[in-house]
Amino acid sequence: MTLADLDKTYLWHPFTQMADWCAEGHTPLVIERGEGVYLFDGEGRRYLDGNASIWTNIHGHGHPAIDAAVRSQLGALAHCSFLGTSNPPAIRLAEKLVGLFPPDTLSRVFFSDDGSTAIECALKMAVQYFQLRGEAGRRKFVAFSGAYHGDTLGAAALGGIETFHGRFAKLGLPVVHAADGAALAAIPPGEIAGVVVEPLIQGAAGMRLWPPGTLRELRDWCDAGGALLILDEVMTGFGRTGKMFACEHEGVTPDLLALAKGLTGGYLPLATTLATERIYRAFLGGPAETFYYGHSYSGNPLGCAAALASLRVFEEEDTLAGLGPKIDHLAAALDGLAARQPRVAEIRQCGMIAGIELSGGDGSLGARVCTAARAHGLLTRPVLDTLVFMPPLSITAAQIDEGLAALEAAIGEVCTQSI
Ligand SMILES: *Cc1c(COP(=O)(O)O)cnc(C)c1O
Image (cartoon, rainbow, N blue to C red; front, side):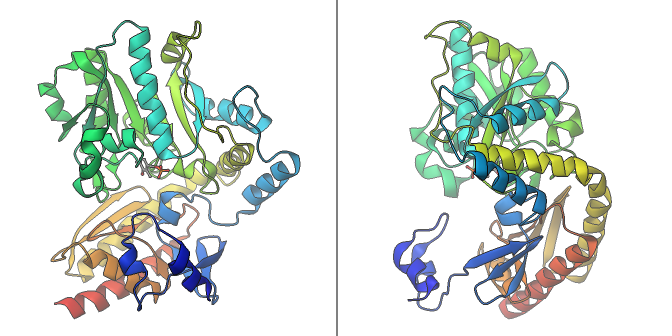
């Protein structure tokens, strides 16, 4: 059997209708190698990684510095439990991460495995924090329509996308869903432990931008009512929006911050929840105050080594300084695309994230365009009829043009067919 056949025989893929995946006419794409912004399949065909391997990759695949750091760590230690012991890369990474925020804001780093667990951890920290402060009545969370915070039960309860979250909405924790910042005015703050939000842009909602000032508005509401502001920078963290973190655009720092996807440069599953000293201190005491939360692979040395190396690459390659011109180039190229393609209804851009919404689709148009784009050497995934282009930050201007040309060719092909 070929690898593709074995896949269809034994695997169950995420967010995938397996009846379609396993259908006679479908051959799974098996990616065997990555180099820079490109991925290669078993036949050696090359694809530009147009969604940075589901929003994770930062400096490209096979970056020599990150490869070397992981190899070197492998020579020392692959894993040892973080429950009761520590390890050098985790210690150094925590110091580095805290240093990325203004003094006396986020000061403690809690490790977990992925975006969902970083959010779960933030929710539990918030609930226990208020219990420890004698405010046990604060146990609800505010989250937003269109929100996506992960797929574990607590994170999914925050979610505001009916297709993904509706089925499980009643199983999770108490959540008040709000349409936007203004809707908070109608929510009594006394029972709210925290407001959870993806700053600047909601990813899985189809790359939807918040009106400028929203973060500030949420910070003020939390401060006035005594709730915690919990930011989910799982997608926006590590340069995606043009600054290291999206919250910097509005000069806001959260009480709790979830980081994952780009933390290791897109290399390994590792996540952190950062907390302020005020929250951390509430947990000091005895067994009753202890935060009983953790995972087998918390603080994994390989992941931490990759994350440290990724942060070093940010410094050595001056990644953030190089982003401005790339973001401008992307904006100009997207303008051209919209002008030439009548089926482009709206383009939403935030830094190195672009959502290209097509008109007249049925929810599957985006997927058909992305499938067609593969033949032109571009790999990406849509959100319904919104095409996503968010390549590794290491992409060059010429490669941005190449990726968008592939997308445009695919839009042309598929939309002509379907008119
Ligand atoms: C991807 C994502 C998550 C979930 O992260 P996983 O690593 O997939 O569990 C949470 N929040 C946001 C904003 C995300 O984009």
